[in-house]
Length: 73
Image 1 (cartoon, rainbow, N blue to C red):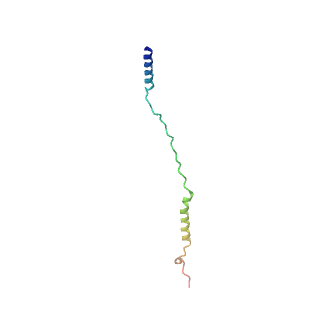
Image 2 (cartoon, rainbow, N blue to C red):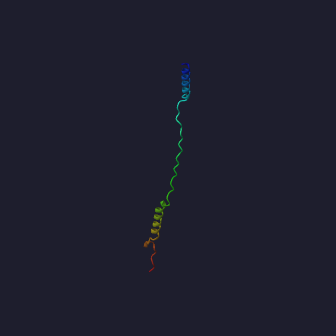
Image 3 (cartoon, rainbow, N blue to C red):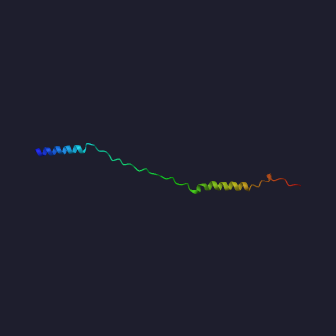
């Protein structure tokens, strides 16, 4: 019986020291996710460039007869 009591005391002391610190969940640090911004497509300037060409062509082809000087008689 004496050996049983000693074994029980050793087991209880071992169990309490094993749980002395309590359970702490492991801390897992997540790696930051880097999202690179997509480069603007080169076609984004296509519409304004075409619009500018149309405006320049319209101004250059303006055949206004009001601005021509009168021919001498």
